[in-house]
Image (cartoon, rainbow, N blue to C red; front, side, top):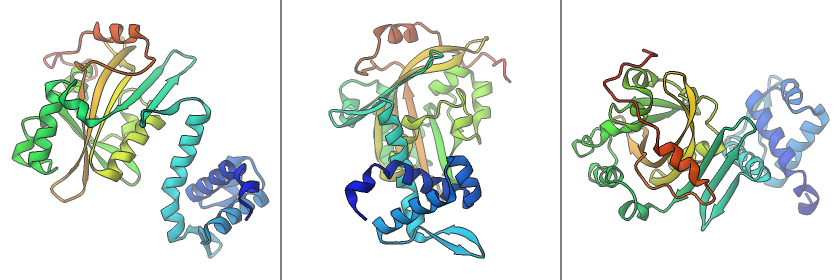
Length: 294
């Protein structure tokens, strides 16, 4: 395969691979892609030729991913998502750390700036510092006694069948403050894209979560966005620092802990200061208030 002649096809080739991997059906794949069967098969052949290994095998006229195809699928999805975000001017890196900016015509926005973990000790609030200390003492075990002092402030997620599920909501978390405890605790068991602000789980959030799952370490992001709030469910600005921590459930499976601190001083390059000012003026919902959604 000639490298230069096929670089311009890479995006469409990846789309063909991911779509066929999702459907395992040529007819459905070509309908979703809007291409011919010949084009789809040619894209797969080019990718297999470039990689030197088959991505699919046919058994009883049914497509199945090979082991190499399974290994390649996640990275292919990531490349597609990154490519779309980059083309739309949403994704970038500042000082080597991920930056994401989304502004929609309906007024919705989502801004994210990744920060070095060392910032925890110099700029962030005490809850994030205490969380890292507790996480270290607990050796990443969520049920360890050392972690219990900060656990009520956290959200816990589990990754099952390619989905992030909410496994636990801390009653003292900012999530519970914002939405009210009676409703927030009913989020347990929901997929992450079914949580408040459904549909806001964009490439930026997925990128952060997937990176954390792969490294199973720590990640610090500053986020400015909008979420439904108040009795009228009006979309209101919210800014927060979010610390993600790779941990373990008692059965040894991966647990992702999300610790949010709205009191941190948000540092996102290019962010309108008015957004931070508007977000800081919103009163949080108190635990004692019974949510209207209960």
